Amino acid sequence: MSTQAIDIAIIAHQIYPFYIGGTEVAMQNLATSLNQKGYRVVVVTRKTPQSQHIETSVPHVFVRTTNIAGLRLIFFMISAMFAVMKLGRVRVAVVVPIDHSWMCYFLKHMGIFTINWARGSDIYDSLFPFAVKQSIESSNITFALSRAIQSLMSKYSSRRTYYIPNGFSIPVDLQKSPQNRVKSTKEPIRLVYAGRLIFYKRVDFAIEALKVLESRGGGFTLDIIGWGPEFDNLQKLSQSLGIEDKIRFHGRLNRRRDVFNLEKQSDIFLYPSSRGQGLGNAVLEAMVLGLPVLSFHVGYFPELIGQDTRGWIVANSKNRNIAIDNLVEKLLEIREKPEDIRIKGKLASHFVTKNFIWDEVVKKMIGIINRVIET
Image (tube, rainbow, N blue to C red; front, side, top):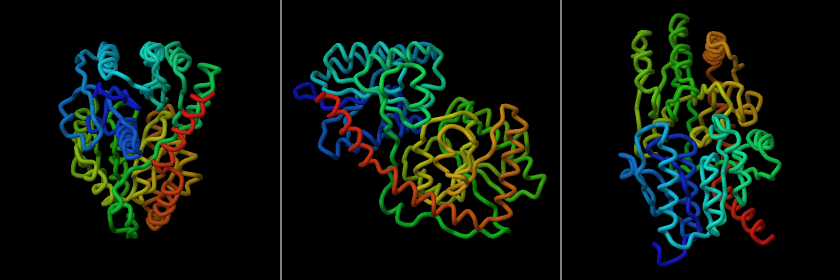
């Protein structure tokens, strides 16, 4: 690869299918879309046991890191820097997450046009605000995944940021027939969650809500797709509550088509995160398939769902019991009007296919890059 210039190197700490989170999926989608447009693209990411399952024609460079949690990111940044140097001539580097401040600094001083893409949790989670500030000011361009993140980033730096959302990427044959079956009051409503299983995603809220619902007539099941540090805890919680027959844990699904097929058999995409996030690919793709979204009132979701038009918004609370009660009450409302699932699902599919197409996202991204380079 070092014999010719690399147009774009995408540097991502983790990539699908190691995690099924929005950033991991988005980086694969971005690489594929750029590659299809004729750009020479390389993805630099850490090596995991799932690396062999990556389904893409885009070249990947896998770097080794450490399993020590506190040092993993530092080791990755060092290894990724050496990997980029070995690639030879790299024109543009897209770096995620945003707190890779010194990596952006060195890439830029190596003559590489450097882009940071703030995805959500990298902003909300950052323990070092100065690192985020330095990343913004060390990069040539900073992208923000949502308007909310764009506004939040203005608190870190006065430099301009550009709004670049996610897009969806689903096989055409699956897009043709979004889920639209009418539920009867006798049929259980199938909820599905897909994403990383980490504490602030609050999948435990969903499990505890199902327990309460069982005492109030039941009528719901939950499929959980994904992996993360909370996987074992969530399984134990469902068992301790005696509702393991209502919940199915699928773990990692290495083929994204398997994720989509499972979602198409579901009715509602449940995303119970209790904090503001970016704009998750998993949510967009579920909406394309005709699943309305049930989410707490955080981050971008009120705008995405639109006054309960394309799903349902649940009042958020810092009090765990109140948040779970609010979720239960909303699910009881849905159970009483199951015909709304089909109506909201069709509106969700139409909204995303109209506004979040990957090709359009990439066109906008390339346009901004070209304008900044020219000026």
